[in-house]
Image (cartoon, rainbow, N blue to C red; front, side, top):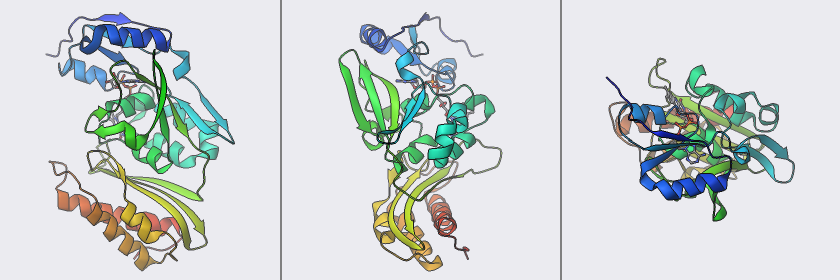
Length: 290
Ligand SMILES: Cc1cc2nc3c(=O)[nH]c(=O)nc-3n(C[C@H](O)[C@H](O)[C@H](O)COP(=O)(O)OP(=O)(O)OC[C@H]3O[C@@H](n4cnc5c(N)ncnc54)[C@H](O)[C@@H]3O)c2cc1C
């Protein structure tokens, strides 16, 4: 039987108050946003806080705005379903809307937040890869002020972020799009699983079949998602053909360091990554993969 320990439920209305509570209760407290990840951890007694600090009343962490110069700002409390449905994101960043529409299942998409997803730093997730391919940044706020980190700087390791104990994530910033086309492709081990075993996020600046620039990220199959610069360097400046896509895919698959677990061995994961990358590049350049 799963029994959650008793806890106090706190509802600060400002970053300052939330940060002061985090500083006061330290390891004894946890932030809660949508609760989709945290409640499972509470039920399994992986964490046993005496205080839960709900950030749902903090206005600073809400809303979606877009400006041509600064780009997109997504409040950390934004639900996956809201990212998927946002007209601004669907129009300007269709890759992000498509990705969010496929996260988990309808229940999780309507309860889980994008900030909670990033802060939990579970490797088998989608937004980090897509946001990295879009050069996104996170705003970390505390009563000491704000700082901005890239996703690369923020995600340190398995379930480990660069958040200081008194900080919360308030916002995700995505610069204006400087690519022609972007894709986020998830590979599920079985259709019944919700979480990706592998994902690949690619943004490309194209001139016909010519690849002028590219950002290529592999996630969910490595402890943290990462750009694969060897693959990017190979593709940049090339006229892309089916053979070039296949060679790039091999380079990517051999450059990453996949985990090996019951969902897939390291070598299997490399083979799937190679296949997904090859097909994705072909599709983005209007080529028929062999
Ligand atoms: C069945 C299932 C399937 C899933 N499938 C997928 C999938 O396919 N793809 C995918 O990407 N994800 C998937 N997920 C993960 C899901 O996206 C996350 O659980 C969700 O986004 C977490 O958000 P939340 O608001 O519920 O976070 P919470 O559970 O409230 O919090 C998660 C963690 O982050 C901390 N936290 C939350 N918000 C902040 C903040 N703003 N600042 C600082 N710390 C914060 C909390 O303290 C806690 O440690 C799945 C989850 C489940 C349960």
